[in-house]
Each structure stands twice: as C-alpha cells, then as structure tokens.
Image (cartoon, rainbow, N blue to C red; front, side, top):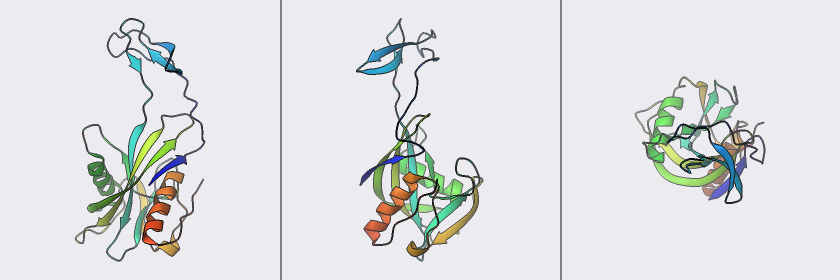
Length: 189
C-alpha cells in the first residue's frame, strides 16, 4: 500500500537560500535546476537537493491483538495518541529503526512482522518525509511502558481506537485495519 499524507498542509513552500557549500564553504546561490529552484555552489557545482527525511511508523499489537499506542508528551501533538515511530538514522536499516523507536517510545521489545506501506508526508514549512509503516507484535517477555516522549501507553481494540495525532498515523492504521478486517481510525488536528 502507498499513500500520501498531508501533515498540516498539502504544499511544500520551502524557500531556498542561506546555506553554504559542503565542499568549498562558500555561500550557495539559487539556480533553476531540472525546473526547480535549488541551491548550488557557483565554484564546484555542488547541489543541495531537498530530499525527504525517512521515518518509521509502527502498528504494534500486544498478545491479545490490541493495538498499542502512546500518548505524546512532546510537541507536535502534545497529549494526543500516536503510533510509535520516528526518524531513521543514516547508519541503520528502517526496520531496525522501527524496533528502536518502539523501545524508546513504548518501552517494548517488538518483532517486525511485515511492511504495511510507504507514505509521502508533505510538510508546509519543513522537509517532506517518506514514512515506512511496519506491523509488529510485542514480544511475550515485554510489558509496554511509556518512554521519555510519552505520557502514557494504551492498548486499544479496533472498535475503541482514540483520535490520532497525525494523518499519516491514521492512514497507516487504516490500511492495517483494512488488511485485518477492522474499522477505520479517526485523525486529530
């Protein structure tokens, strides 16, 4: 499954400017390259491509088949429920990042069981993201507990899901529930 989420707005309005060449150290200039305004070095032709960041989203099931969510203790979305997940480090496989984020956010050792989908997450004033959504289950010896970024952890049946913080989380959970035969999730602001 693939999707397109709009977190805050549909259009990316990033304005190039103000960066320096990673090779020469001189200010980059704005040029039109392949029909897009990008920053490039006038000396060595380095181009600062506006590539998306890679993030993971994890739909975690506990031993009873309930979906484990965290209630955010940080912005954006403070106090709202969300899937565990986060940014992929440059030296790790996305599935390993998904496992790490589950350990950090919901205090659970999980086993990744499948890739659910890939989602484009557009941002208005920030770099867009590519979200890789995984399905996972909590290992039997683990009891989820809130990590530093979560206020609490909850386990919800498909019919009892709370409102979610982000459209991308709603979309991944909706795709998961469609595969499993459950109801859809609601999105928050």
